[in-house]
Length: 88
Image 1 (cartoon, rainbow, N blue to C red):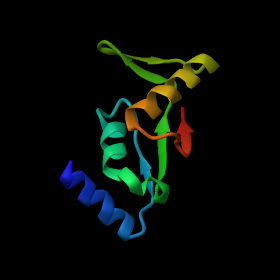
Image 2 (image 1 turned 90 degrees about the horizontal axis):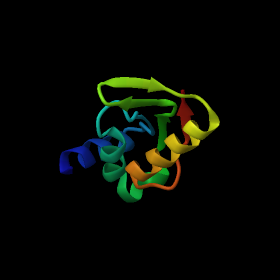
Image 3 (image 1 turned 45 degrees about the vertical axis):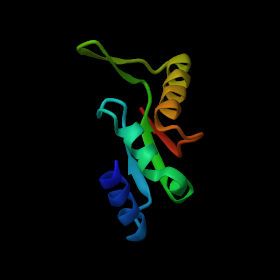
């Protein structure tokens, strides 16, 4: 966690403000949420919706209920109240 925070802090210092994460990429949303901490307002977070790991498979669901549920899970994982963009 300290290394992740240091990397995110340095990225922000260098002007990198957009971070791309996805639930299929392991704990990327949790790690970025923790690393940003109080600097969340300085960053743009882009994540995915409609794509989920189900056991050993990947499921694609793009109906409105799946997208809303995916957004809610993403916010819970990152422990932040908003994302800036969603990709399907």
